[in-house]
Length: 559
Image (cartoon, rainbow, N blue to C red; front, side, top):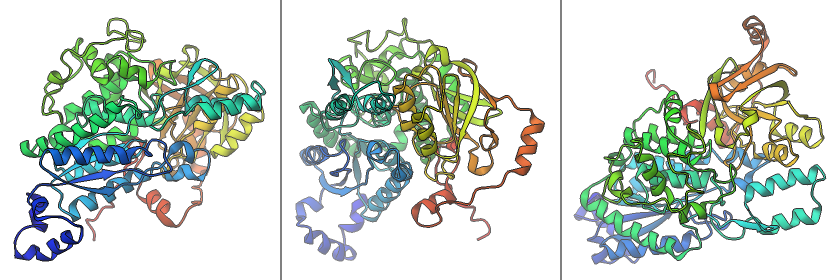
């Protein structure tokens, strides 16, 4: 056992003395030591129930012959952090979570791990750590929130943000706004649509790192507790068989995850996280792969905000496995990939019937023949940009309009609420990238205000920042190179005509190469607003969004 380093032999007597201080018995010390990474806290709605999940995991581990030991991981609520300086501290936690979990796991020599994440950066951060540490590991999330109900219709957090825009436009009263406020988030759990948290929890299943239902069983269902117990039991099976994360998270498994991503219509943030996780597993996910996969993968689900259905309905329809079974009918998945069930993907999804063809379209009758996400390139985004194609109104798939340029989110929101943005405009928000932000803020506020004011099918938004999974409309993010490094988005001027052609994967500004070169010659980098603390260190090391905004280790050859 790996943990023998702190449990066996005379040299480990000091270590055992400290284990004794924890109340650990000799019987417990003889068993594999299983670290349970608890992301429980009392500020994130998706994490307030994780104490119960952790207790269930502990029971499962103990039942299967292991010694469970809990340690923490942090998590930020993106909804609470949205629209102010707090959002600068969201994406950057992904690396803090990975780093701190790596430190805890290796410092204490755990034999196996059970990761208990739920919201946004917590999931990819722990997947990154799992790849690094590479001991037998199983994931079990806290589960999605149930949808709220307002005026007889199901609603979610994206509805709340859009209601703010509707109120600003005078379309709803203050009393109606308050009704949304009180009803859209009715339970604990990750927000109820196919936003980033649920996207990543579903993709954890697709990768093979979580058990069936990990991404879809609602947080408040007792089935979630059963799942957690099974995760605790299953990690002991993984330990006995020595099946490790890098045995599961292979290149083929990531291709599966990208395929499922396209079918589900996941958050654009998955285009940051999957490459970052793959990087930790020693795999390079080239962005060009994504359009290739999208071109052959039908979009089978229109979950909120793209459509009127929610994760609870995806669960009832058969969940991620049912989606994967549909995809397998066209030979779109690698069925031989190993998973934490101890079985292959093909064995896992066999017989997983699609129980609701309105929630999961049959592969013969998709919402579209191409996937939910598209990578765009052009003279405005020479490296890449990302759009959730499945959430774009048909009339905005091709759009041409004048640039309305803002150097931060706050200025853009003020202009939109002030009625200064009109139909046909292309809002450009820059200096919000990984380095420029720093931290690559989500632009949910501006997209929601645009939608709430009734401009969602008439106004586009382009940014070197990113979007919440709750954003909808022609929201194009992750523009690379970013403005802070002198990318073309830094050179766009008010009134420049921008051409968006999503079907042909293009994003261009109609300015000559000569004019762009002249503007580049005059461009000066902005003085960083943040020069101290973690954000400054992040800005110094952050790679472009096209590389997953990972932290790149400086070249040490000359040291």
